[in-house]
Image: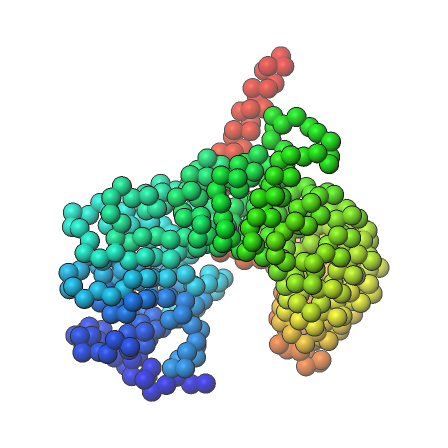
Length: 511
């Protein structure tokens, strides 16, 4: 599809900003969305700001406006352009302050932008989720502290990413002392490098009754006591997706051990989760859940569509429950990394994939001790998964010949588009430990490239050039981690320093 004549005309107009700004008063209201997308495409930040200041419609939905349309089929949602997004927020601030008396804007939905590794906008300068949170929060604070009272109030839907670095600004934006020209409503919330008390405070302010997605990750040090307190005190009736950090189900340090089947904190957490009637995505990676999967997932009100149980130390009972439970026939995204699935649970793993085959789109099996002996079973288990679009199995010691056989089988999966495969063990000296450290891995490049080209040739000869393959040696791209790496690095250094101080103190007490 090609862009329409209307969109071409909008591009021509906004490409001359001064002319466009002088003409806005005579532009029909229903053309504002078209002018906005054209301005975003051409990075005309000055036009975007004035468009938002004068926005004549009741709603402004960023994701919808940047998505494909009949006038312009290109999807611009993967352009997190700093200049354009800053202009949007500044334009909203101008809108609530300007005194034209004709404001109709009631709702501004700033969600829908995707953070990608390669920024698609011409300037190449992205504003990530943390930066967008910081910008919105500080703009709200400026409006609250401004000398001029706002003449209008707008409800703003936001995807917040809160760390120690922007915590105070977000708290002030969510809990203004006076009138709030921009009323922030959080539908998606990510927390990192906060202590448990800060997390509880900001979530209580973030309208938890409206929250759809909650991600508590990495450097939020939660144990089962914190999780139980959070879920018991803050209710999330609309929550559809929940991610908890590593070790979130560990007992508190001062908790008296009980029998394995008598864990009141875990029982309470499971009950609280069962009350979330909209929950369809759950990520509890790197928590020890041996023998507890049925107690955790059995009572859930709705079937899960996404489940991350990576490195949870599952046992036979856990895998048998997963294979036979209601969730299996609804799963679209599944991560079982860190478990020797084919070696320890071959029948349960085979049955699980068979029952999930009609819905499963994304499967991750990283570091699952898959080697050449397991290849036939793996191929057989994957063969019915005709809806599979993405497969990741890094960190498994497979040879080049085994990978070649696997790629031939993957060609039979009609919807497969993305594969992340491990460095073949042929690249390393015989008998070497696998996976290798980063220094050793830097020496395999030439041999790896030769094998990778051969594997791509397998796909090409089968007419499957639509499948992209890669080996992200240092992990998949994570825009949130990249954006806050300096802050998180400082957080980790402080945590290490504190641990050393505690260790030194303990040694002195022993003396």
